[in-house]
Image 1 (cartoon, rainbow, N blue to C red):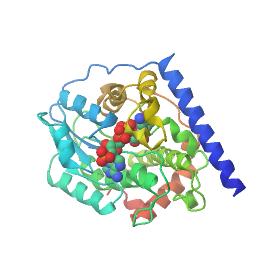
Image 2 (tube, rainbow, N blue to C red):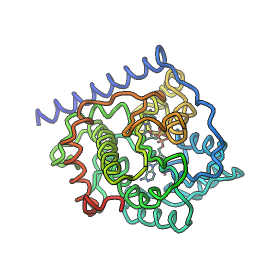
Image 3 (tube, rainbow, N blue to C red):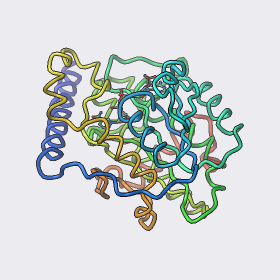
Length: 325
Ligand SMILES: NC(=O)c1ccc[n+]([C@@H]2O[C@H](COP(=O)([O-])OP(=O)(O)OC[C@H]3O[C@@H](n4cnc5c(N)ncnc54)[C@H](OP(=O)(O)O)[C@@H]3O)[C@@H](O)[C@H]2O)c1
């Protein structure tokens, strides 16, 4: 009990410290860098999760204006079709990352289109809230932010690996500066059944994204597969992501005034997905404010990367050496 209270206090303190540090940094000495001019994409296909609102919606609009065809995976396709009404180049399909059957259905529909898949942006996410489990026993934040995306990448990778041309296919994982809260990730208790703190669960899901990106890059490189894996922190941006924080709406005006805009957040996704200048850099790449940055030391620990990879494949029922094949 005392241990849980201390953990609760620790993660509350840490999320505020990390958030405040990045917020000041992003508003004072490392301000938003606008998108570089991007070449016309000539109908390249981008698959994005959670593009109906927030930074994802803004990214979809910019991707389409650069000439991409964007397939958006969302929980309420009819509502999101309304959001993009009149915009050419967006296709909206049903996807619920909390349901692995829905992930498989979505992947099946995408693959049935029979088009080359150039970019997968794993953007959808939830933050905080009480502990809940899916029917498969997956904690909600881990499942939405991490496990659902792993399965989706596994299913789309064979097609992405066949992309030809000068520019490699890319997998972009939208992580967060909050991955620092995942520095005590316990791979033997990924669902946090022994004790749940919402901020810890969010941090765990975000650090898992980075660990997985590093391991995936290595696996693909060893297989000689030319798919680039990138991760990023999009900035501290006032969106619906914060809606589970009690009383946040009372200070919404202040939040909008001091945080980055969803459009600025969307830029970081578009840059990671399309910027040709990133082509020369080696995977895995972690971008903060559109520049390569270093992530926490845990994310570079190859032993943890390997054990998370094994645990993830076990949970998703994928033989580890068959991932993405
Ligand atoms: N905002 C920030 O300050 C910030 C900072 C660091 C990282 N990030 C990351 O940026 C990403 C986007 O966040 P945001 O700020 O744009 O948040 P947002 O406005 O709340 O958007 C979240 C998106 O995720 C989708 N989503 C949630 N649960 C889903 C599920 N089960 N299946 C499919 N889609 C689901 C939502 O779709 P529905 O409309 O169906 O709910 C929505 O489109 C997240 O991964 C977040 O962790 C954000």
